[in-house]
Length: 354
Image 1 (cartoon, rainbow, N blue to C red):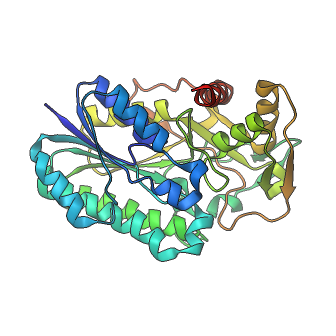
Image 2 (tube, one colour):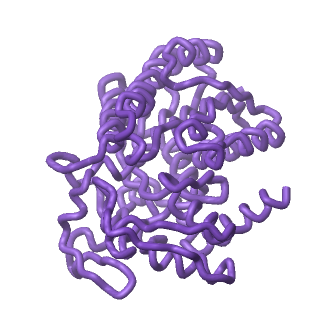
């Protein structure tokens, strides 16, 4: 039986991928030590999702391994060897605020952890598809120097600009402020590309905007839409960091992202880089997201807008996914912002009842 290794398997993207691959007939081997709880506290724990995976997927096997443990990672890959046909590396330290508190842990998880996975795959299953969930933060704050105009509820790029359809992979990652998180992910991103080119492995970096969906354990420092809806649902106050609340994010539902992974696996390309976000199909400003949450929940959200923005944060980010769509024309996005928010809200209510 074909085997898939999924790191961060109890997280948003990892769990979506695990369920999808199980439906395709894979034996799914999950790696997740609930580091999210360590990073962000009890509310961010993914234990609930791990328990659901173990209960719902008969062929799912969970391993409580830290990706920084090269020996443990190598040993696990050695058990399955060439039966491994698919590797999704979604485990990460995902917050630029947290990275500044402990740069060594951030780099160890994001950069060294990725190297451990790549080397294990090269030694034991070099023909497997290797997908890395990278980030648009590898571009640093370069997008903030685009010609932006202020509208009533959002910032928007100047009409006619080359990036008006969205930012593509031609944007430089050099000579900008990245945040330490952006640097650790960029290091991993480059290593994934290099293993593809140097060793001929089928690697891909998917540089995500905001990844979201009902399986997200949102927290203040990571998981924008999920945490916003949690605050609206539970009556918690919410803080917007800078830019008058008009900063724009494209949000891609985890199911649409996993479909990208699968199309890449079927296509068998080598060492690719794709911007992976909601694009023009699915994006919103903070103010627009708050308004939608209030309408879905049916009551006002208590929020304030801080005058201070986060270092390296984007004012406007909309991904251009045309490169991927050209390579894989059968891929189509299904979830816009409102549909996604309704799913997140329904998921929160279901978990509370359960």
